[in-house]
Amino acid sequence: MFEISDFFGYERYSLRCGKTELSVISLGAAISSLRYDGQELLLGFEDAEGYEKGWSYLNMIVGRYANRIRGGRVNISGREYQLECNEGRNQLHGGTEGLHKKRWTLSAHSDESFTLSCTSPDGECGYPGELKVSVSYTVTDASMTVRFQAVSDRDTVFAPTTHAYFRLNPSCFDTRLRLNASRYMPTDGENLPLGICPVDERFDFRSLRPIGENYDHCFIPDGECSALLSGEKTAVFFRSDFPAMQLYTGEFLPPAFEKNAGFALEPEFCPDSPNRSDCPSPLLKAGERFDRFAEYRFCPVEEILL
Ligand code: GLA
Image (cartoon, rainbow, N blue to C red; front, side, top):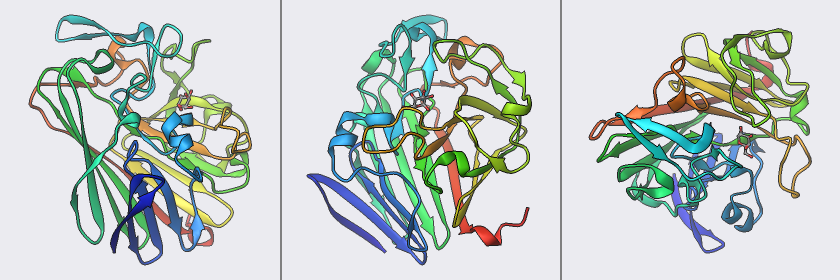
């Protein structure tokens, strides 16, 4: 079932299918609620202010480039571009007027799915090309899928994410996590990657275990991105065709929430990939179609088969 309602002056689009209920607001195409079997799975703001301020990019669509780009510098098809720098001398999450700031419009809907779209003009936050972006949210009785599609009229880079913060336990340190990643990216003092290294004990989540401490790191999956998030009541099986995933444990959340109340597992391209030869390229050629997904399947925690 699809419904439109008001969220403090913004459109709110809701889907319900069996045990899964999803609401997304037009601002930043942010998920304002995701419930499975009556339980809220995400952190959420009570009103529009937190989303308008873009605090912690809570549950928003982030882009054009999710994560950091060193010096805000990119070389696209042989030409240097200086992007807007909004975190010291680097760019974070696409700049101040990123996709999280857009008021997205409804472009299609059915009983199980809807699509929100927006346009980022040529040169916005320093990126070349007029970029048309669509994000579809689809639910089934026990899943949510986010699909990203985009096309640019000039060669550009594009690497969005969905910045959903799961809250499956009162503290995310108690949520158990399994990641199919034998490599990760250690970071420097500016949270930029230093390289790609094999996981040591601290970064090895290949067997399900509590998150336990703070992380803000990119993991490189062995094959397709996949993860299991196991909380008090609900487990989430995550899968995506993005090349990497950032684990951010919410060390700095807005005052409305306790520290580490939720965590984000962001399907992404690697941080700073435009400046790295060891990572998949985020280049989107003029006229080429970007099409990637992130899928979340839910079940009661006692039903997970390890
Ligand atoms: C990402 C970054 C973090 C932080 C959050 C948003 O996960 O890696 O450092 O900026 O987004 O607060």
